[in-house]
Each structure stands twice: as C-alpha cells, then as structure tokens.
Image 1 (cartoon, rainbow, N blue to C red):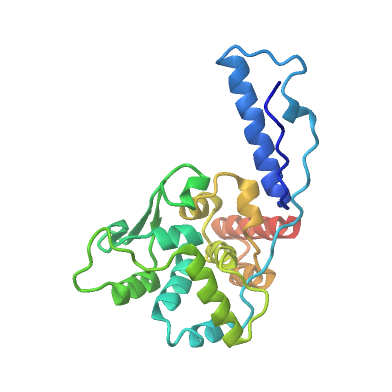
Image 2: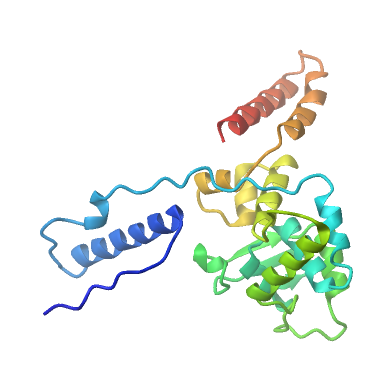
Length: 257
C-alpha cells in the first residue's frame, strides 16, 4: 500500500501555486532525465492550468506618509533606520534583518546581501547593492563605536520588524501599508531617478522583467517632469531627440503596466 496522501489545508496566493507547480514540474523532469524514471502520463504539472497572479499590490507611500511614519518612530530609532534603509536599498524585510556590519562597506558605499539570507534565498544568488548618501548617513548613525563584523545592524527579526512597523503605522494614522510595500516604493523611485532596467534589477535582485514590472508603479507626473526639459530643447539637436524618444517609450511602458 502506498504512502497516504496528505491534503494541505491552507490558503495560498496564486503566485505560490505557480511556484510550487513549477517546482513539481522541475523535480519530475530531473527524475525522468537524470534518474531514469518513467511517468506513463508525462509530467502532471505541465498539463494543469495555472492561476493568474492578477495585477499585484500597487501600494506606494502617499504624500505626507513618509514624514508621518518617521515622526511615529521617534522612540524607536532602529525602526526608523530600517524604514529608511528599505526605501534607499529596495532590500526585502528578511534581507534587512539579516544584515551584519561585515556586510557594509563604507569606503566603496556598497551593501552585501548574502545568498543565505531569508530573502536572498528567493533568487538563490547574492548581490552587492550600492548605497545612497542617505543610506550611508543612516548606517553611520546606527553603527556602534565597537561594532563587530557579525553583529546585527538593526537588531530586529522579521516578525519583530513587522510588528513594530504596524504599530508605527497606527500611531501615524496610515492604513494599508506593509513593510514589503517599501520595496515597491524603492524600486519605483529608482526608475524615477532615471536608472534603466539592468541597473535597477542589479540593485533589487529581480531576475525577470515581468517580476520587476510587478514591483514598479511609476508615477506619470514624474515621467512628465523628465520629459518637459527635453521637449523645450531644440528639435535640431539629435541626441536630445533620442532622449525624448526614450522618455516617450518609458511612458508607454508605464501605461501597459
């Protein structure tokens, strides 16, 4: 008699279903090609329709929310540092909580996000993210005088960070904002600064364009501001025409998201 089937009584999102089905298909493929197994009906996961992930969350910080959130962190400096670093680096909650001082290179202005971190394990690869001047200032402020390389930067676990963030949002009167939304905010800001897809993905760790697009909610008014000075330049200036065309292309991409 075969092993009993176990039904997983849980509610999961469409993205989780797709990932688990892809994993099952991969395992079956390896079993057939590498281990010589024979499945009479082929790979089951490949014959099943997969749910649509929908449009995903599009929550960004609204005008004034960042200032209110910072004011709500007056008595919790570690939370203030975590929020600022999340916005400045686009790091995941688990990646931020796993940071140790040995990951920070003040001289090169970089942050090492290690593959064994809970968040980095989603992509299976480590990455080195650049640090903005604001991030450097916050890390300088946060660093103890005798910090050890393996000492935690923030002193938070992922659960503790989420709870502290939720309490700060309540104090600030902010509704519907989650810690992971700061990653959306950061990714969108990188595009609004003028970075291209490859530059942004190198910072955020996204491996596919589709996933990067899901994390990006560009504001049309920001793109309009970028286009205005280009439009005012002479039409005879070819390089500027190229720049204007690129800005228009970016606006079309925004409308498709």
